[in-house]
Image (cartoon, rainbow, N blue to C red):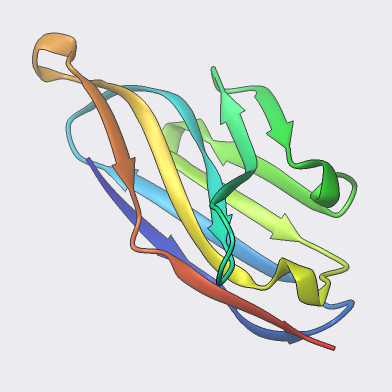
Length: 120
């Protein structure tokens, strides 16, 4: 299963960005899809995710500013990031977990990552 990410870039504090992640391949179902981020010198952390197509989870520090939404029919998820802060600067990576068509084997796939930089 491949994940293709789009979005990211440089924005001033208070601005907005939208990340998208599209999954492709022999997908039977996606159980969880979401975004992680890793800033230099810090551990990777879960930013937001959707489970079972509708259950959302957010990092406390982004709650109320970020919104994750899925397009189930397209195996795509979007992360709308508003009121961005310099501390949101990181490499954002998409992750998806689920089952493939062949033998219903599990998959756990990652995108290449996209840089988000918020200037003060």
